[in-house]
Image (cartoon, rainbow, N blue to C red):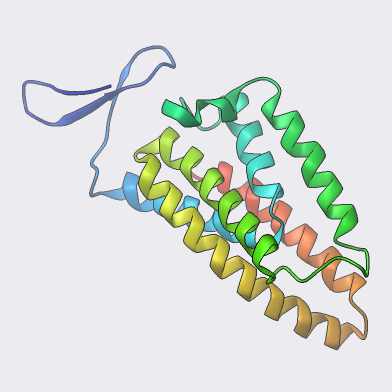
Length: 183
């Protein structure tokens, strides 16, 4: 819910305590949100379900503030558990030699969709759902293509894929956790 005060500066009412929080849509808040959404999109490009799992936990625990609109389901009680189960399943199946490339259309599309979802959740909690969605989707493309190239180079350096895959898992989880703690 957006309204203005006597000085005509934008004020957003936030459900946590119903205290208004001032923000400047063109200032630091927007820049930080875009950076966070882009980074969580990169995480989705590395591991599709890790990004929405971490973001849904942050939303459910109140770390992101109030998530509003059609994306509020990300803060529901069971959403983090569902995404966590999917993320754990993905971590296991990624280690299998029969897993297809992340660059095939279905895998690529799923990563973009999950990056957009996670980015939109961050955007909805901070300043703009649509800008967060776009930044998350762009981040997912960057993460998918960059992650594939980095993993290929690491696998070549290690002489096998498993150490590169485990390192990618650690980076994805660590980056996702760091993103939800950004101011």
